[in-house]
Image (cartoon, rainbow, N blue to C red):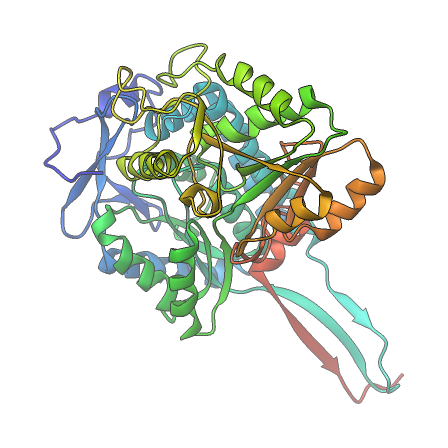
Length: 506
């Protein structure tokens, strides 16, 4: 995202057409301590629509100084928020959920403008994101402790759970809405306060969430948003991970950045949750339903133009059905409609930024240079815009190609044949990533074996759409720490306190 001087009303008019109330606060501000404030430096940066490169709004380019103000506000708010009852927090979260449901069309349009994903996918993300607010509004009442059996008659022993304190939430651009609600919903339900740093490409979505949180009555300082351009992201990330005010940090993004934040959090021994990169295998056994498998492959690979951490990265196809799968997969890929996500009928939008476009182009060029075969697609869709890329199917893959080991994060589907179940599992596990894995089979014994043997945190068996608020989302190996969503998601934001009552006359 380039930084340049913003016009007086850059992008604001187009967004106001969606919702006359969304930007009634002062323009070009972020949300800290219940107020709409500019960056202390007065600097701004523009958000660009990846479909056409046009500016859609200007937001504050904040720095570590602004971040410290937000953290101080969160620390002050924690003094009272931690003492609210679970019911009180649940009621406020429910109000937030109700407003978000009412504004789902507006929110989806903002997501599409910022990220480029088709409007149908943006509506799906809003529904998915709202489900976390709904879930945690109820889960707040289920933060239960334990009474344990004492070995001594005069003692009573129990465990209670308490919120850890102020938490930093650093969220990505590929799911700019749901990754905030998944983290903030759990944190607020637990009694924590938070400072959110949204991705540089998609800050307006975060500000919209904050606006509606304010309308719902979330008290000042409980939820804060610090926006910044890429140049200020490292210093803000360091402040959010090293400040003594911060009790914990939750990050969704690349493994490389996650490792850096992990190191920085270690200086304060902070609680940390990391949802990092994936390299998901998608295995099709010879007994699989190929129509079901190819439908699953389309849905999984090309959602958000392939820019999801649980997207299939390596398609491993049994040699007996390899050619048939390739033909069916290619036929369905050719029916995908690439274009501006705001237009009806579009299935695949642009890549979100130039860095992703460059990465996808590099990985494709490397594969072609080393002898891969392009079955369909294989080039940018430049006639549509600078960041569009054709859905591409590649065979003839060898281990020396970048696409074999790198997370592609784009609309390139690479297909590799295998002979045996053991070979497929070995290839699937030959990576330091372990987020999600998928396979298709009609053999129930094989389903249990392969599900057990895949080195991932989540497995889709004859299913590609595995996420929901009720599911525990997270990986193993270098794909992260902790779990988000489900009853386990709230555990990231509480600690166990042991109480021992002694010298009782029982």
